[in-house]
Image (cartoon, rainbow, N blue to C red):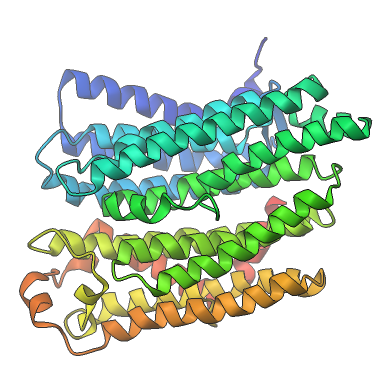
Length: 486
């Protein structure tokens, strides 16, 4: 097997990330220097992001049978890099106070990002499985990084065990499909499915369902969601912006790619299961969020409903694949920047808290009166999650609604309306809390610096807020960019 220069160029972001990982590893073994490792990791991600420019002229391209890189992959890889870059910035201020080894944190982020990038361009079951594991294994360590805190180790153990079970489902599904298709290549599967008998289709259907279950677990879709609130509560806040975006973006991209390749496996049972899972995720996610007092658990449940909305896109991937790509890119773009801003703000407040614990929703009571700009950005982010006009979230929800109307998905449309009303109530509950009279305990413990917007974390939060607002008012620039990549 030989790889030519063009294929090597196509792998440039992955190669740069690998080089960064190796250098960070060697640097840690030689001489620990937190500042150097943090800066080098951030520069590595910036270099990987810039290298995407060289891919534009050469895609689409196959790199062996394992990877297929197209312009759409470039957009998703860009999102993953932005998420990883922001996670390193958020983590730096938190790790300054961390009493144990700090440098390995960046190494775990880089390796997991490497898995996410490779997963996005995967075109083969072998690379799909390996890269999902490459994303997950460093995340076990990241969740348990604040092991001295309550729930952290427990959350990590839960994720390890349940992730292991989902990997078993994935391998089982791959094996069942291979027994019929005789190939692990996505494209070959598409061709084989057209010529198989009715009995063989049942075997393939079983295998496909197993793969879906594994991917739905990683996306924390109902009924595979039980781990989500506990993991969100137990994870360090600086990890959450990475965990809630990078793995979800990469796994949804491969889910959409895989689903488009088996669309000729027309089966009503599969679509019925998908319909049921989508509706339950939207409704239960929002309903459970209503009952939460812990802000991390709250966003854990709302992430379930957010990804439930995203699953609606799968219903048009067969008829109108290009529009499904456009809708998913817009939706995930909003999901990315909203999560970065949201968890950036929570991380900033947690780091400023004397007890390093500001997880209750009531802790944010009256924040506006001491931090008006921070509260305004937080309000904007919550409105974007709810899908209110002049935010990017409204454009994303509008795409989903247009799919529902165009395809006459009446039952999903009904759950979409109920879920949106419930979600709006959930987010308004936190927004109102920000503008109430400040609580006495909060005044005593919270001490966010007035110059927070001049810090690297503050700049990232402000830029994310501005992007959500500007793209919400003038979405054409983003829509045109997305259309160029399709």
